[in-house]
Length: 66
Image (tube, rainbow, N blue to C red; front, side, top):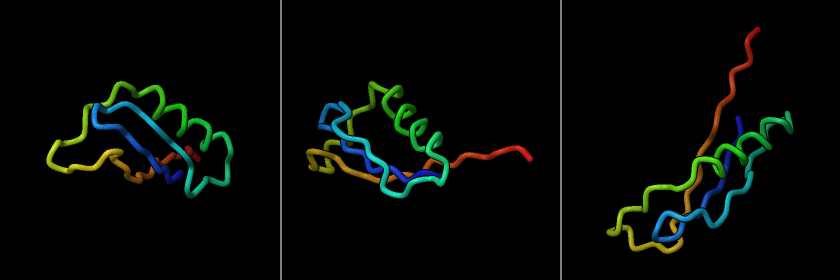
């Protein structure tokens, strides 16, 4: 798993993505960052959150077949 911190502006533009809890496999860290960058454009955050930038954390999980 890779835990990421992400920040979006009020229009959904990606301002920041960084690894906050890395996987022990650097390949997964790199792929997680690339996945978020490639997922643009993002839907704008709800206006009633009144947070600019809108910052959150999420975890991406990888499953290796045995």
